[in-house]
Structures are given as C-alpha cells and as structure tokens.
Image 1: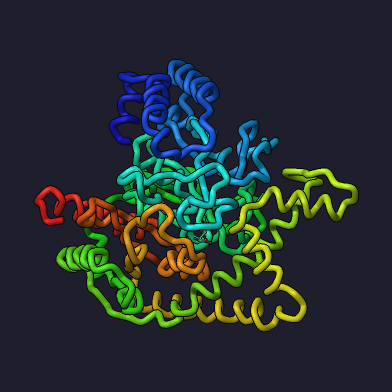
Image 2: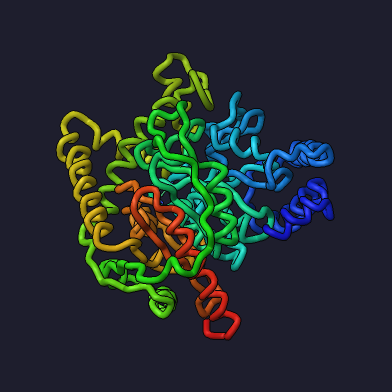
Length: 477
Ligand code: GLN
C-alpha cells in the first residue's frame, strides 16, 4: 500500500488506473471466488475521477484519496444496495451512509463494492448467504470463514487492497485467519455502529481488514472516533498510527492462556502459534502462562445473548417498514409470510432461539443468567490483563474447512471458541497471519489487550508479521 500511495502522490499513477486495475482483478478472480454481492463499477470510476481532479488541483482529501476499498454488505451505503446477504433486503437501497462510510468518503476512498456475508452476519463460513457461497482464494473447495468472508477473500485475492468487516463473535478475525489477512475487532465503542445493520448491538463492532498490519492500522485510524449518532460510542480520542518500534517487545508481558492450547487445537496451528511466541520471547518479551477458565462458558453465553439480541433487532423486518413483503388476506398472515419468505434457515433458527430465551418463563433461566456469566467472563479477562500487557492465542482451532463440512449448526458455532471472549468483554483483538500449514492454508494468531490498546496490539502484530515473513524466507514454515 505504501508504494501505491507514494506513486499516487507523485502522480506516477492515477486513481483511475488504480481503480481500473482492481476492477480488472475482480473481473478475473471473482467468478471463482464470489467475494462480492455488488460491484459498483460506474460509481467507482466516477469517484476515482473526482479523486484525480482533486489531486491535480492540489486538494487531495488525504494520502488515501483515490484508493479503492470494499465494504461488508451489512454497512449502509447511500444509493448502493445493502442486502445483509438476505432475500429480506435484496432490493434495499439505503438513503444514508453509515458513519464509517462517511469517514471513508471524507478521506477520498473509492468504494468499489459490497462484499458477501452470512445472512445478517450469522455464521462462520459465508455459506449462509442468500447470494451464494464465497470460496477461499487459497483453495476454492474451502470456506473463507465468516461472516465477513467476502471482505477477507476480496483482500486475500488482491481484488481490493483493504476492506471493512463486522465482528460480533469473531466475524472479522476468523475469516482473516482463514484467508491469511490481518483483521481487527476494535474496542467496543471506538468505531461507530450508526448505519451498521445490527446483529447484536452489545457485541457488534466494525473493523479493518488488510494484507499488512500497517495498512490495517491506517484504515483503523480513518474509521475510529466518537460519533454522537451512536449512543454506545465511546468518548475516546482518535486513533494515532503507532511508530513501528521493535523496542515495544522489551519486557512486554505476554499472557498465554492454557485453555486456548488444549484438546481440539490442530497441532499445526499450535506449532505455528508457539513458534511466534518463541520469537517474541527471543526479542525481549516475557511469556507468562495464565488461566482464562471462564472461556469454557464463552460460546454458550455468546449464543444466548446473540440470539436474544438478534431476535429483538430483526423484529423490524415485518414486510411493512423494511424488506420483503408477501401480500396476504390479513396483516398477521402477511407478517408471517413475509418473514418466512425473507429469512433463511439459520436466521429463523436464531430468531426462534432468541425469542425463547427472552420469553417470560425462561428469561431468568437463560438471558439473565447469560448476562451474569458475561460479567464473570469480563472480570476474568480484566483480571488477566492486570497481570500482563497482551494475551496471545490462536485465532481459530483449525485452518479453513471444506465447503459443506459443517452441517450441524452446533459444530459451526464452535468456530468462535477463541474469539467470542473479546466481544463478550469488549476488549480489542487482532488476528495476524502466522504461517501456512502443510496444505498451504493460512493460520492466524490472536493478540488481545486492554480497552483502547489497539496501538500496542498493532505493534506486537507487526513484529509477529516481520518474524513470520523472516521464517518463511528462510524456509522454516
Ligand atoms: N460466527 C459467529 C456467529 O455465527 C460470529 C458472527 C459475527 O461475528 N458476526 O454468530
């Protein structure tokens, strides 16, 4: 990306040429990958034209003016349809931009299109999209992860230099790990959710995805910041991209939770993650074994809360105000028919589960109980973070699985085993590629830290990236 920005700056290359190049990459690769639901070729070329004109007049909006980006299709884009991967919203064209989109436009980024996702961001493979499956660019017979599978695959395939995803239980980090790209789930509240279609508002965050840590950090700096339009937005200052100083590792206390290295963890993933930990140690970090015992409850707690919140958020799709409408003789039948036709089976499953856990007879046993366990999980995490600076784990227990391999929804839910904890406790978590397994599939390492510690996470991630590249150059991976 650095080279791209430099050549734009000295006008060796125009935004038109950059965008044209990426559109050609999309035309070439996307028929096999299907990362995009919508490609806005005309709009992208027009935006590139505007960027070139501004630059010629010495009025570039930012160093990134004219750089293309793709955005997950649950983020509202004015005039460009936003489907959430659902038949329910297949014709929905927002009348406004999400705050993150306004921020990108303010920096002059060129929105080339909207990427595929599991319907309403519910899933871990992008197989639950109503618009078809996305394929992993490293092996087309495998999933790219999900739910931000399109955003991860588009970056991995070189169709765009970076993208935005959303993460409620792991949906940025797991696909980043499966596709070999960098992905950040920011501190809850640092990025505005205004205009982002809600899955579970107490857990959702928008975050950057890119090939390199530095680029993910630069994109994060563009989107992070307080937004009065989002009541849950943190009163945090803007994010400053850190200086990439190796000194950051000196005496850095790295927590290694034993629960994330136990049965079920693929041996090649474990080997790669432990290799990175050893490298950090060699560079001055101090590894500290610790326990995060409450992670045993993370998936159950997450599922109870995510289904409850989703069932409530998705009540608005009733055929009247938004979305698909199937006419019927009376209004109740119309609601039922519209929702039956508009939602896919995973969404229906979650709405039913969520309605059940919120129902009067079960509320205390499930929803309230899950809230209490969430507090315990949060306390466990914050307690660990009072003893160490960062916590490092694998991002996922395995590399990308085959398309169609996980028919049982419970098995699919286990994909979030290592990622849900950060959403439940609100802390930031970064996934960085940590090597390829014997099938040539990427694996990811996760770095978690205290609230608003993104600068530190990026710096540690950068050192890991350097180390992994060094080992790859020496044929050690
Ligand atoms: N895989 C998780 C789920 O299915 C995460 C979803 C997300 O983060 N949007 O709920």
